[in-house]
Image (cartoon, rainbow, N blue to C red; front, side):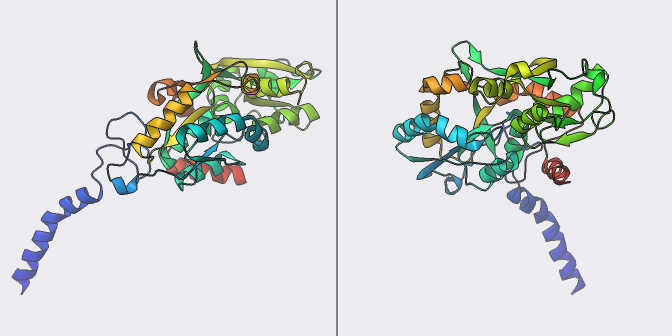
Amino acid sequence: MLQKLIKHLSALALLLPVIAYAQDSCANRGEMDPQYCDANHDLVADTPTDPKKLKTPSTLVFTFTPVEDPAVYDKIFKPFTDYLAQCTSKKVMFFQVQSNAAEIEAMRSGRLHVGGFSPGPTNFAVNIAGAVPFAVIGDAKGYQGYSLIVIVKKDSAIQKMTDLQGKKVAHTAPSSNSGHMAPVALFPKLGVTPDKDYKVIFSGKHDQSILGVNSGDYDAAAVASDVFDRMVDRGAIKAENFRVIYRSEKFPTQDFSYAHDLEPKFRDKMLKCFYEYRFTDELKKAFSGADRFYPINFKKDFEMIRFVAHTAGESFSRAAYEKQQAATKK
């Protein structure tokens, strides 16, 4: 009896590697969640090989990063979503999201098919939601970039970065590139370390940080230059009421990503629609003269953003994301 048991256990031991391989035949996934794979090392989730896992939505759900009031962009993108519906022969719905976390969760759960993401959260969207970045707003010369800027009120006594010590300084959210991770990575070399020389106050959004400086709730704020410029263009704020005491080198601005499990033929048709579209005058005005969705390569074009995050000691794993969300709620 004992010999039979040993024989059976030995056979099971031989099968275990095969079973494990059957359960996870992915050769590489980096920091991605277990349901995704990156066999070709391009840093984004591979398209599922099982046809049953592919999606061709009857209603294509689209959104734009919640850096400002979502209702503003619902209206601005209406001509585009109408065009996208005609071009793809699908219904298109603009999905208003109130936070980066809500946008990531919507794509992870399959409720969002394509949309604009802020640069920082994009890396989490790629790893835990299967987002595949494919375009950034731009023009014939290339894609738009933005800088991290630090703003203060015009009459503020703060003149240089070291003057931020002991002040009330707004960051936007833990996952934001310009709103948090870039300041953590870049500010120490300028003589001021966030959460050491000043306490970080998370405002939730770039526009809230900007308005908070304007109202006096914050002494200064680290925000994205493109959001600041758009608010000036819309008349939401007056540029002359602020001073910029720091401006970084440029980063890619909001990218557009699709869900990795879209059926390839439908996905390629949708991408063609994006790339061929030319912006309305209202969209051009909203995005500083940009007139198109400019193709990008996530591995290459987001390298600097990943560098900033890693320099700041951040990763883009599920554990890192949950830690950031917990910090936001404190």
